[in-house]
Image: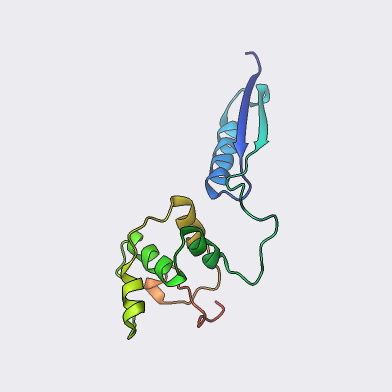
Length: 140
């Protein structure tokens, strides 16, 4: 068998790129001619507009909210809706109630995966399948 070349473009910050990398590695482990396969990795930047260094004062959730041009609260409400959960935001301010209802956008699969992996979750028992975002959280 002649050498098989596989070219892969990948971003180190992309969760789906990592999943694909691991699957390719596992497939090659089981492939009887793996020694005849050459994998060539190429870098690919998913977000060329991303700053070189992140501001440590801005959380990942805040960065994602800014990307969509919405508030963190709106992002959290939409996140819950996309998980099939019914969020019950509390507000006595008419402006906040309007903002809480303005969630007619879709969070990308990549951002949903990133939100699922946000640290500092509060343990809500069986309801802990989703992270709780906010300033009043306790380290988990």
